[in-house]
Image (cartoon, rainbow, N blue to C red):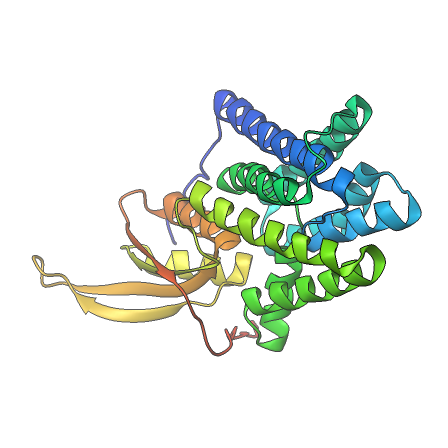
Length: 292
């Protein structure tokens, strides 16, 4: 029988630190939205952008729109990315919703100059989102949706997110004017670059190689629990000359934390190599095995 290992436990102190970091990142993002972008009708991309457009057009509370639109994506993530990510994402979205309401009632507008709002709003928003992502949470369901669709239709996560955002900015141009839409695109670009800086250059995809004596268990868990496609490679140890099984996979930044968790669960001494992937072609196939 395979050896049973206990899952890694999170201490209360670690839990509090992560909650504080997620809340801080959400409030930084909320400050950027309500004190720079919303007053000047400049929008972000993704679910946040949709919520902002609805806020402008219908007057619906921005925080409420953020929470309601993100909920289906959070539920979708439960089956794809695990309960810890879902809990952390729900908490981050709830904090962002609270933050937008707090700063809205404070009614503090830093600047009414569109260019300044675009630049500094994008920088601050990117910093807030980056902090949340770095602590294994999310405030926007767009990447979760893209992750699921990429497996069904063969497009990359980046291509789906880009297509979704192009659609949003076209709607923004029609609803708010093309000048505001162009300012919004600049804001999104700045925020995206700042997110990368906060995450130390973390890209959408990572190439991962794992060397472990528990390679079979790790690989099967990644496939069955997280729907991550893996390839087994055969190698020979340089010193021991013993045959080794290597695991190779390409994952998104949202999946990277899950890979680390699974590897740590089975083999704390495993060798893990992670490389940035700038372009990915082809589809990831999941082989389904019928069990009798």
